[in-house]
Length: 471
Image (tube, rainbow, N blue to C red; front, side):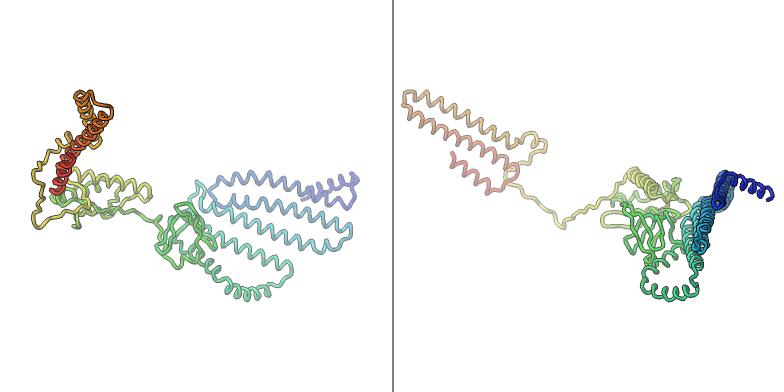
């Protein structure tokens, strides 16, 4: 201390030697001291904080990091307040000395609240994720989030009441008014309070936490929990959009948490044909052995494979087992392999999977009558000999055209000396005759195809009459 006062005296004499006015000496000294202390704490606390981060303690580095910035701000606040007090005293401003202590107390209280808030926000991730060399058990993020909100609310309340006391406001009157106002606010904000206490119940009971997959059979709620707030819980649905659920709803609905399952269930029904009833026992034994040999199946749980039902068109085999894997994607990969293995077992045993088919058994035999003179051709002959409609029409046209040429040439040889008009008339008649002849042949071929398809007797007689008239 003697050395500090000696240094301060020498510094004062040095300032006096500079010719600075006396009323500026103390403000300048206060600013100089603030600069020196700020630099000292900056170069000292920063290395200390880095060293404390390597320790196994979760509190020490957080406390130093939370304390450093508010303390440096407090040093500069005191330096500025000292400068303002000396300047106000020099210029004879009584209001400065009257209100400055209150301002200093309020600013100091604000910095204290800032320090507490920094500590609360920094300690939360450290409690959830402790240092690697620490042996302490980490806390759940949902629990720590609830504690952080509670301590933050307490800190804000304490700082607010203390600030009112500094301002000279009676706390008893504030509390009395707060009781009456709280009653009125309770009636006016019932839903808000219900959501608040619903959030507290969620934090205390912990039916789910941030990151859990939840769903409700009572409401269309399903997704991953992203945040549990004072009033709302944000759930990210699987299609993508977020779902904001008021906390009061969770006290009235059933919530399922699939993230906390210890195993997943495979429950399938394998359907085999009635004709394969003699293969049921080998199939059941082979499927049971396959499940017992799989490493992904939980052998501590029940493995059931049995013939348990006869349905309308199949013999039902139940496959019931559990997997150790609870991840949704990997579970379906395991289920995929199990079902393919069951399929291979059914086929290897000489059986087949049943299809929803029905067989109709007639009480009396059913006879199918065929037209008289109908010879059922072989399927191979039908495919080879039956022409298509396009080919028939083409053959009809070629036959009619050839017949027309033949008739025209014969007519020209017999009546070479006839006049042009008679020749034209005969040619026209010849073409008409050829056309009718071609049509007769075309009808004959169509009737032949119709006979192959089994036409009725009335249709056959009608075609014959028409052919006779055309001829």
